[in-house]
Image 1 (cartoon, rainbow, N blue to C red):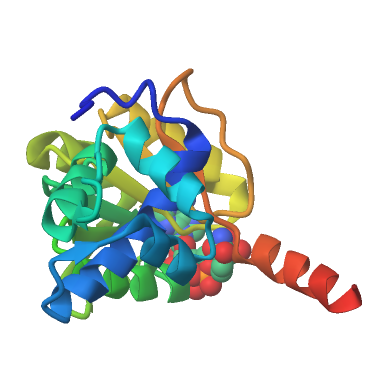
Image 2: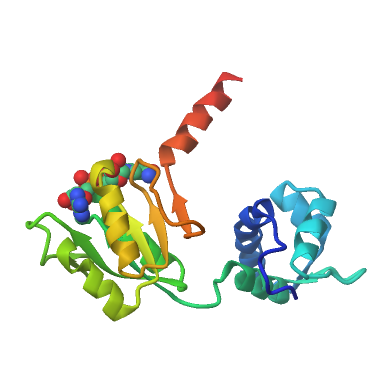
Length: 209
Ligand code: NAI
């Protein structure tokens, strides 16, 4: 299979988690193979779109057999980089930070939050579920000492850029940003801005048509 991600378009990458979710469901039901027709029907894509997507990363279905679900699942995990563990921290131990730390920790074994960081002295030294909440001042040392991969930013927009700069300087490899602002990061630095309100606003647009 094609291990380089360079040939896979962003729109294909964005569809992969949906394929993966459905394949996982089929695997859990003990099903071992699936056709592009079935995949397309379930996910609302045309069979040729499915074949094109899967061919792009080197998964070729056999005529009359379809795709091996196990192989497809493994290929998608490899493309997405999910065949390894990621260590994560959350900056901002408020409502959202605590909810996300619980969610990410339990949902998928590839991701593990090990600590939260906050500036509020009333929170520092306490725990969020089973996870410790440390002072923001300690975040750089913690990232270096524990080789943290992903920083999850759950703080107000005003301090978000300064916090992003600190954790990038400390060697964080990617940022999942929930602060309501677009952060400046070095070129090609992996960052995803997640704004639930964007989705809500496009939902209300759909209600108008
Ligand atoms: P919250 O007020 O419950 O928590 C914010 C936490 O950040 C507080 O504990 C505060 O002490 C801490 N904090 C402030 N400045 C800090 C800094 N420089 N370093 C470390 N910690 C710091 O607020 P909530 O509800 O958890 O929301 C957090 C942020 O996420 C807000 O900016 C909110 O607008 C945003 N948000 C974004 C969503 C999204 O879809 N992207 C959804 C919900 C909230």
